[in-house]
Image 1: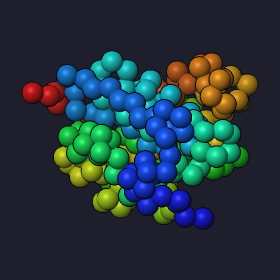
Image 2: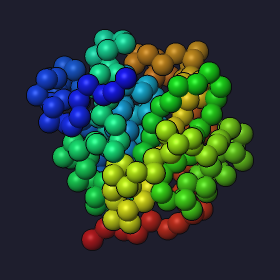
Image 3: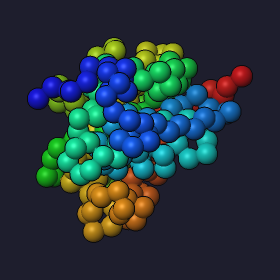
Length: 211
């Protein structure tokens, strides 16, 4: 089934910001690495929290957070190759490195690795594997290889897309509960996962500063 909206302007004309969804972002004066969750909140649960934690105080962060009633947030999904929300797109275009966080279906815990930045992608994958998390190169429908994908819209025209299955995301929150109220209750696996991703990034490259 395709997306209900083909652009952010269509979504914004039909949904109410502050009631149905919210945009949030944070910028760092010192880094050009951006962690994004364009399907955050209730759209692909857990991705906003992961991107936020991975960016910390050192890197840029952006999310479009859906907070409609359970089961209705999927209509806020705009596929990554068409995602054109102005703030998020501007932040992506200004970034040298992008890690875009997504949720995928799946009853086995797995992270599918995609995007056009193969060096950074593989280093993150190696760090996750070393930390005990299952990883795989993404299948074609999840591989983030379209140059128009928001992950690949940075200054280097390449980025990383992480697709975490439902089962993997459940491991990161207490009692496997992905509800909004419970997503503040992270597990040790959440901390280990974010640490592995940031370790992979640190091992792969030195992020240039701004200014």
